[in-house]
Image (cartoon, rainbow, N blue to C red; front, side, top):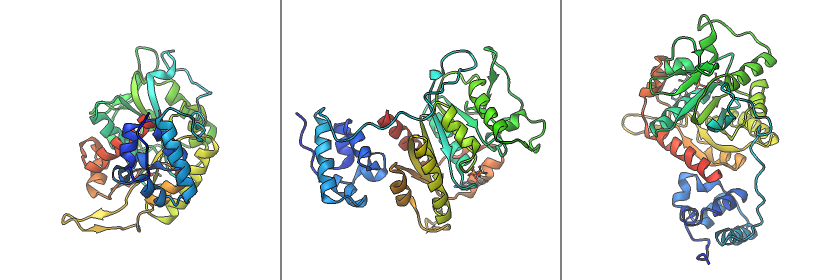
Length: 344
Ligand SMILES: Nc1ncnc2c1ncn2[C@@H]1O[C@H](COP(=O)(O)OP(=O)(O)OP(=O)(O)O)[C@@H](O)[C@H]1O
């Protein structure tokens, strides 16, 4: 018999002791288990933040205790991740489970830093020793190859598929720019062609063994995100936004799309949250953080709030993103892997 879980207990202590309670927190709309806040927040505090009426808190406590004791809870399990029903075959003919997790990075609005978050998340995961690939799903505006400084064209792999290019740090990358004669050549394609290219980048590329395949999507809810959501065996989606209210509003469209397609949102990232001077003064250039709203809208944890750093822009432009190091991105990667571990 487990110890009785009470409202004054710290959320992280509860989930550490009784991992089965994670699903209960999530099922009740409390994503605090993966938030940094959950490390010091009590169950009652989390419920207050998410405006739980007393009867909902009471049901939560009842379910937490039931889960801790292996009993039935009022929470029904979430639907299977999107795309699972349409498995594509990998280039070498092996079933696709050589890739452990396929995660799409999405945003509603353009220019909020989705590609940058994809790139830096990949870099931090690689530093953890993970095998990582990036599929640049932004066919008409690809930026991943440039960010990593990968040059040349992919060759044929030993298995007859397309061999992805490798970054200096060993991240496997495939991006439309690699197949163009000149980086500046436009890709003037309609939706079906773009969708077909994305599917081929998944199925015809010899990704080999990967812990994570990150799929960087173009902004919005057009054909490309739809293709990824429906045709790829997606394990989850990370949503990127910026503090601007407009970005938050447009992000809502993305969230609705993911939810309509029965996808799973791993978490949200707020980029360009603030700028910090060398003296440590903070300026919220695009307005105050909308992180709490994003968490409320998605029911998923805030994986990170990232500052504006001009050093980043310079390194990305020079193809040297892997040389960047900042605690925020290591935390982002840690929150990301923890959330996925909990969800499994
Ligand atoms: N936190 C940041 N600090 C400094 N520069 C940033 C930051 N985030 C993004 N940028 C810069 O802003 C620009 C846009 O970022 P990025 O290309 O990642 O956005 P995106 O959302 O993927 O854009 P698109 O809509 O074109 O796909 C890039 O030049 C990038 O280097």
